[in-house]
Length: 259
Ligand SMILES: [Zn+2]
Image (cartoon, rainbow, N blue to C red; front, top):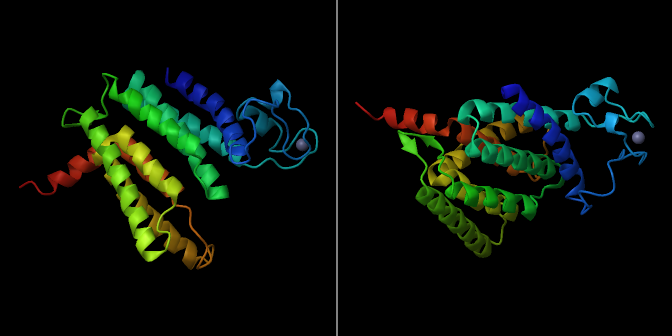
């Protein structure tokens, strides 16, 4: 079963590549049929087999021999891997399906934000929908020691909206953008899915991981001083970590204070 879920993840990953390529450019995601971004040659079905085609073609277009971005392979592999992880953590149920959709939307956000510094509203709406569906599912995130109730989800959404308004106020007062609007909308949407506990943990993890990586990038001179940094990918890392091991992290942290 886990191989089946992973395989579906790979196939779906191909579609995510289409979204990542077409969403920011306002291109239709269904038409025209997939083609090489360089020579525009229409791709045959055998050029579109996830992972296999990329490896067989040596990462080059069959027609113009131009190198295909390794991103295509990466997105498919990461999506397949995380879908399999989702199956092993949640089992085969509605919660797993929602987690898989959430993971895929997060991947699209990551790669679009890295390239274009934007998070499309459509992707944040996708997260919102996943959160709304979870409210009505019998499955809950978490375990008996800490189960995320639908009330936690609603509070998480309220927290996100409050955070968004607070940042808007700060920006108005100081006339300086603190965090991108897309990031803030994403936090609100994720709040409704993960609940307030896992959302706050995710933001904390994102800040810690983001600061560490940015410091390393600066030291290695890979990022200029005033270059704007995309926070979306770090939020995604934080939220996905929170989704999979957040409850354990929170329990571990709380146990530190138990004597
Ligand atoms: Zn080509």
